[in-house]
Length: 315
Image 1 (cartoon, rainbow, N blue to C red):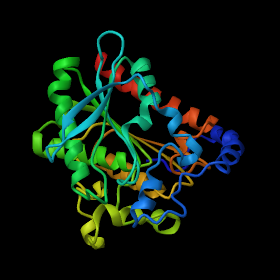
Image 2 (image 1 turned 135 degrees about the vertical axis):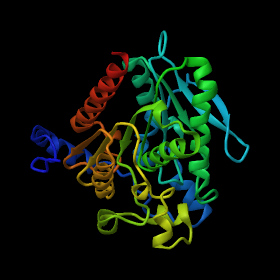
Image 3 (image 1 turned 90 degrees about the horizontal axis):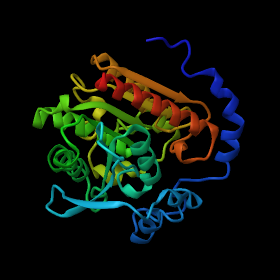
Image 4 (image 1 turned 45 degrees about the vertical axis):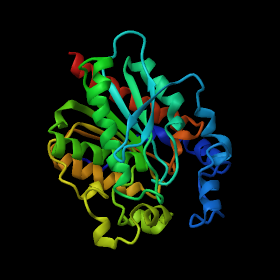
């Protein structure tokens, strides 16, 4: 693994714009006491978060289905189907620190992914902490993956599967892959994992400790001590990562989860899985929601990676 150049130096051209745009947006839950119902509700208000930038991704005309979550309740699936036959089905798991967020945050990107790559994208709702701490989220995401393997394939055909997510969603995507391998002997069904600024060590990587907002960890795992938070189903950095699919890890250098992607990409590769690590300078957590050339570069890199994965299957 060559560490002489962590990112493409051509990206330096986009740094001034990235920093200027960053100064105008905030995705933090500043001033919200997440231990109170009022503070939690305010933090979960996607219409106002980041000045409404997330709400701009919502689409009205979406095919909404349901699946049965692990607790027996009906949870939402937002389905984006391509014109014609799907080449693959992509399971999208939204982010939000395990305590907020909704699949609709990814509507525009998921629709674009379906159109660009001729794949079906299924974005899954899951129960949120602190009302539903671990293992509720992973349990629901496992159930969503089983829906894709069952009813999803009945609809879209016996095509390969992809999985992806950002932040907490990347954690849950990785955990789902491990569960599908260990519990359902289904690792080979997945041909790629798109893991974007994920939190892979809930016990705290150095960048989390130095830069991070760690309140989400308390809500997700409650009173588990540091060792307990390293349970591989909570922190997939500590999981057995052998015999998993190729993965693309995307992260910015200003992200408090920067080390999570550095460490997880290294372990993913050391386990023998094809691995790409895409690093973006002057980019914070959630930077792909910002209207910048850096975001465009990240999206283009992801599209190129997806195209390569799909072309390999088609070939």
